Image (cartoon, rainbow, N blue to C red; front, side, top):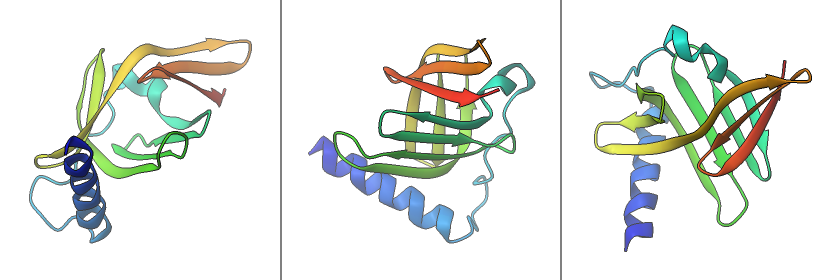
Length: 118
């Protein structure tokens, strides 16, 4: 049942976001200055995460069941960031924040290590 609820929420977010987000409060929030290292195109094993400085997030996961989320950031803390519209949200847990090592950025989100070039 939970999977169906999450799927319905994800579909609702994608539909509203794809329709141009014509509702009040759908704009999301720009990435805070202290979180600017999160901005960019991140990739991992079967995962793509794009975080724009304007506050939009595009997430695709193909391993272990396909998931796709395209939505604005609603909240960004040290421990997580939430994207979505209204009650239809997705929370991403920040296990390890971005860190630059040997010319490449690394971070771990929801247990998945992601990388992006410098």
